[in-house]
Length: 440
Image (cartoon, rainbow, N blue to C red; front, side, top):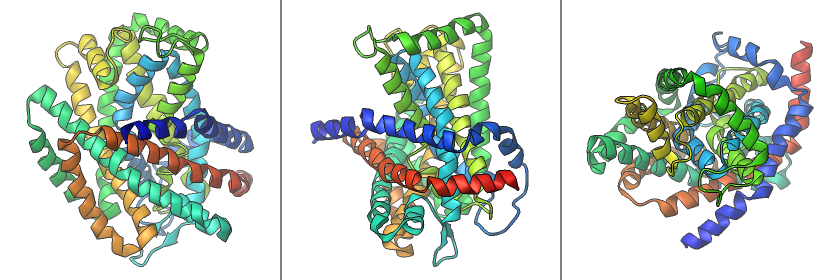
């Protein structure tokens, strides 16, 4: 079964899917005439404005923080390190490129999510790819909506729950000698307190915790980079030169080609910011707004913050500390970089970063999975889903997750396919709404 899942993962996340993810972003950026890039400053300004309407469940800022709570996770620490090891420093360049075009993808997802959202039996605003496929396309496309919801619900238990719980338990046991079951119990109780209160409580916690954790991680990484400021020019030179010449940390066997830099840079960029997967628009559909374009502008900032800021800081820490080619990979490489760059306390930044990032990812993905389950089975599925979600946390914290990780990897890729098809077919709707906004 593991061999089969490995094969499926390779197919799902092969050149075709990566090209489609990047290609849709390029297509939308061109069709939008670089709107996401030109209106980034205005998008940041809009975050401080109060909601213009009560038509929604959470504020636009809270929607962004809820989406970021799911995207800023272990991928920002472990994923970036893996990309550098497997694809060389040049992978960082392709990660940046993916994020730049991914801003248009995330923008389009949120525009459609708000435009085609519904109000369920409980009075909650629900939306996302399954709803803009159902309400924006003809009945013959309805199977794509069901496919997205099914893959999203299944993927959430892997990538958004069990894998994250295991990462927290592993990091805490390694550095504080606290047994996995203790972490499992505490984490389950903390998550229960939040998710049983629904999206409004998730949004409140996310709006407080996400900015705090991101700022703390940024400050720690920035301090390390400034201490090693003399290595900054060399780090950027290495990124740009390796992007087109190819170099690998792992002795050349895994990433000595430009293709490896592209493959791992694009893949890790997508895993990190989730542009194109269709997860973030589920959160943005709950925003208090009547303006799809304005929420789209807020949504695109998630890609910028997640990849162009947080992931870049991790990459620079690894490169300026000079440990990127010393044989470590994943979270261990990031930990080594922080420990060598900031002796005595650098390692704690990674440990607490992993723990908090994983905790918020569990919160964000619980909402995504819940909305997918509701689409499939109705509001009666909400509480059973939450109970299953809480049960899965200790199972993940205490288990061996090779199979779960592979299955979640496959489901994540399968989520992207129907969403990308919908984005392409509905792109004229996004272009029209954007033109109207620019003329107003």
